[in-house]
Amino acid sequence: MPDCQRLTTDGLQALLDALRARGYRVIGPTLRDQAIVYDDIHTLDDLPAGWTDEQEAGHYRLTRRRDDALFGYAVGPHSWKRFLHPPVQRLWRARHEDDEIIVVAEPAEATRVALLGVRACELHAIAIQDRVLLGGDYRDGHYEARRRDNFIVAVNCAEAGGTCFCVSMDTGPQAQHGFDLALTELVGDGEHRFLVEAGTPAGREVLAELPASPASDAEIAAAEATLAATAASMGREMAAGDVRELLLANLEHPRWDDVASRCLTCGNCTLVCPTCFCTSEADSSDLTGTETARSRRWDSCFTMDFSYLHGGSVRASGRARYRQWMTHKLATWHDQFGTSGCVGCGRCITWCPVGIDITEEVRAIRETRDGAPT
Image (cartoon, rainbow, N blue to C red):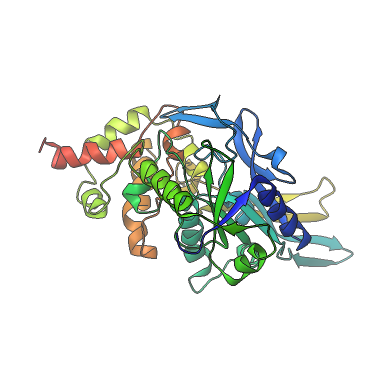
């Protein structure tokens, strides 16, 4: 943690004020609907002070901490995807005037958004979406506009959630890149404080305006010990080195039937996933029939219509749809984009209503390759 500065809670409030003074809409973690979700943040009072989340397969519950940590939780049901690649995006509108049809493309919405509390796994997820939506020949103009002027304040994880496995995916718990500022929260044993590291010129410019002081060697050592403890306490593990080859060599493994017998094909895993990007398009019209619009909406490889071709679905069974999701996420994503599509955040495990665990499915296939115990 080179060149770390130290902020108090007053300094963190000064950071929020500095971002708003620059015209940023600050979005961060807050409590709503018995979950920690991302929404507008104005003061430290909006943050989930003293709350944490208890997560296991198919289980999420907020519980009280023994301290007033502002970022003492893992990740909730929302990811930053909903602000950068929203669930519904209108693409164009058309209206009928006299004998003429006028089509107007929906302009890209460029907003100055500061993201507060971005975890290391989520930084990797944003980088993956950047490669998918901006890295090829066909760039998504709406995503590009929303990503153009972000300010990202990362938070290093002080504890792992019950379904986290970012260490396995080499995506956490410490933010290494992709942020303007990165915070490590230190609570207990004295004053509530944050170590802050700048990752970009923009981050250094904002940090220079804050009431910061150099971090002591003891504080840096405490932060490093906290991160080491987090890395050692992951709730899950996935040996990811050969997963691509493992899955593609076992496309007819009986485990796919086993998971299909449990899977509801509800699509929860794809909706909470911070990297899934699949969409479909739908047209709508007003009651008079004079105006029509086309919108893009999040879709899922678990829906029957997603692979609908020539009178039927290519993947008609739950087995085929779950296999498509998991093999794309962990295997063929490498072929398309040069990386895994999974960042180890554990959301798909937590928010699966029947508790299907992607790490357990990989383990089961690994231990019984070709359908026989190894």
